[in-house]
Amino acid sequence: MKRMKAWMLTVILLVCGAIVAQAQVMKAGDLEKYAKEKYGDKWLDAAKNLAEGLSLDKNQSLTYQQVIEVPGKTREQLYVALNYWATATFNDKQAITLNDKEAGCIIITSTIPSIVTHTGTMNKYSVSITPIIRLDIKEGRIRVTYTVQNYDILRDISGGWLSLVDTDSRTYGDSKRKKDDKTNANLYDERWEIARHYPFVDEDKQKRTCAKALVMTHAYSNAIMDKVEEAVKNGVVGNEDDDW
Image (cartoon, rainbow, N blue to C red):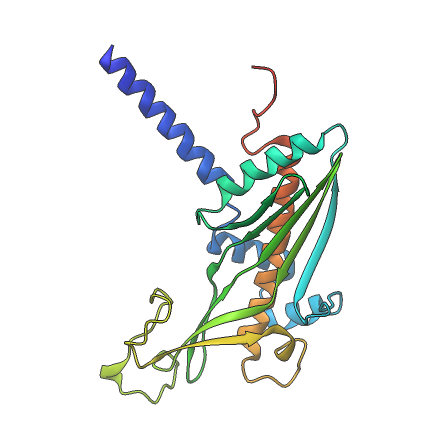
């Protein structure tokens, strides 16, 4: 009996692990592959082409919005499905910043670390983004709003190809430093406003970094929209029906 219970527990843990792994939006490596397949690997051209169809909102943020029709699904069913998806997808326990069943609104804020890394002439950059994902729920449909206000940058002055920092002092910062840690003199935290950088501003010293950042941010928005639609139409794991 003990052996049977242990076996059953192992199966349950494996299934739960599979659910969590399946529910992840997309790993950085897979996201870059997806972005290259869809937009090409010439980041400057890809960003410029994307910008032609994009516009910044009144707060100068990059915002995407999509209404997903889900005929036959009640407001209650959609609310439960979206909560399940959000909980299974975002490991950060504080990711869900608003969950109002009565208003039919869920807001998620979660940082995607190192969505882009780029080694420049004098610096190495690691770019993270913190999308705000708003899910509005009505009978038979939901509206997804995805907003990114800026790029969070970790700049390593010792990591560039021609960095002036002495070779023995180089750290090659990898963005794993804890927030507000000031112990490494070669690392600088910066915040870049999207509206002030390429491709929305052509003359940009960080053009290559921001070109890739825009394409990856755009690709991540597509992944979010696809995953939300899949969750409300077919479930997170595909067996969340009422026949049990």
